[in-house]
Image (cartoon, rainbow, N blue to C red):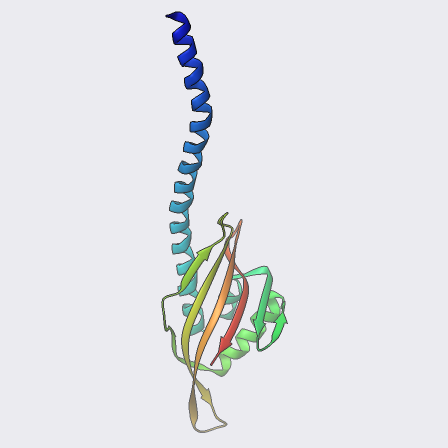
Length: 168
């Protein structure tokens, strides 16, 4: 009887060595999944802030969303502007235009890397700006954009690491 109990205990221990890690992996996967939902909400908040910063013409807060290694891909050009260069570009742009509309055409598509350190957001947006024409009449310019924001998780939160932009 004593032999049988030891044998079953050894057999149970061996089984636990295999079952426990599998159980642990499944548990961690569920925690990661739950955290990704929280991360998705943070990304959506940043997407909303971008809209606010455009409509309020706040180039400083907008460019503070960029990572230190920010890349821009637009009109066939790959650029890695400094934060100051990005600020100056957007500040000048914001001063030239009046936003009439800056809205998503479709809900953003968000995907995360397996380790949760990167996220990409696919956006389709319609932007209508009023462009001043000389001293008199202003005209509206409507553009349908599709772009890809790549976010990187840093110790300061999510930062925009790369933007690839196209328009119709």
